[in-house]
Image 1 (cartoon, one colour):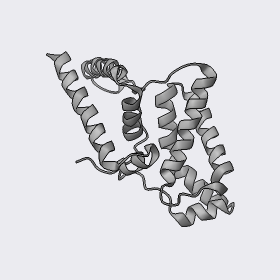
Image 2 (cartoon, rainbow, N blue to C red):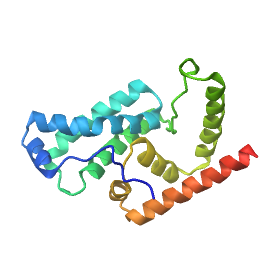
Image 3 (cartoon, rainbow, N blue to C red):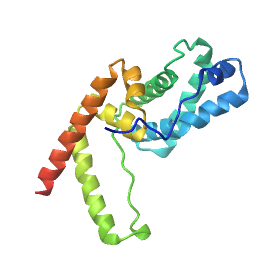
Length: 185
């Protein structure tokens, strides 16, 4: 069973209430807690650092503007990521383009060249397999592994049951694994 994202803990209701009241320190804490995950999520969709930065800024501006109307005290992460997803969708509507999952590039200068070539070849194969997933499956992978949301947070965001999200993610990963092995045979 996979861990439930020990890297990031959400903000508590006291911090949220303080931010609603305009406390700059609380707003900064929210930003510090979510900015990197939201940036990575945006970057995985638009694969352009400048656009990802702009979308992240737009997300936090919308969070600040909407914070007073936040009603779901127990799922702040889902709420803030819904804003991030909306910003990406707005971006795609404006630019008539579609995002894909972006993988980082291995720098051969920082390691074994042969290892980098093998990694790059595997990355290309995985990228081609990810394109075969439907948009809902790609979004699950983005939210889980790029944005590093827990299954609970993803379930809240997508309006699904946690167990269903966990099983769907597992099925996708199992299918990708089988397909990767088949390509290596």
